[in-house]
Image 1 (cartoon, rainbow, N blue to C red):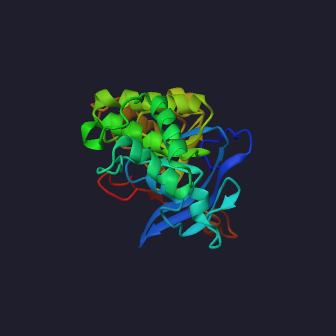
Image 2 (image 1 turned 135 degrees about the horizontal axis):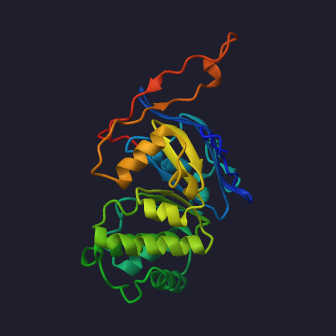
Image 3 (image 1 turned 120 degrees about the horizontal axis):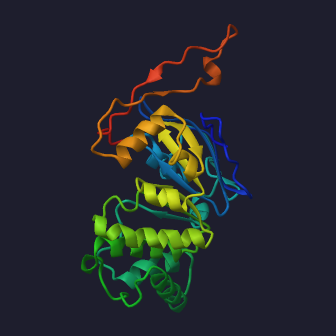
Length: 297
């Protein structure tokens, strides 16, 4: 279970689909993740919020080893993906991931975008792959667009195709990395509606998002990150509706009231085991708020 510094830690129910312990990630001398502990139960929807540069996307990318952790362990569906002997390609077959950009093959039509991985990775026949693809296109509200090419679709439609492509691989869990951030405001709702339906169906989901209304209404648990730490977590009514940590309050105030400018709250990093001495707890220095222009997540 993640270390929430508010003293309120709802435990996930059921078996853990994802178990993260002591996760650290460095990019050179830059420490982006600083000891993350987090369990996600099967069927749970966990939304991760926080300022740019807090490590949200890096955390998500470590789950399926798109980023190699510096330290710690990550267990997905019982497989330790940080074990050098882990067959990561086998594990990834059960993980769907949707990125900020749609990453569709521009030279393939929608149907082929949804069937190519099924046929090459899952070894499905052409007819079976097309049947699965059509079912998932209908699921995301795009039935009848099989022959369209990505350039003929709106951004929201392309993102829904990307979701359908992930679903066509029959994943047991889905990772969403700010899936609406590249969309026009008018197109966001269609994508969020698809994600809401997946949550209603019991799909295990980790969602990095700035959509506070979605997190409040759909998430079972909201995790607030800053400066590579989990600062606060709990039910959405707690973290979004009644945050306890000053840094969470400041972040939500700025997100929910963007024209209001006030003094940024600072996040004090928790003392680690190596900070402790025989004479008592070490003094923990305040960590500055991460520069939002920092491209590292």
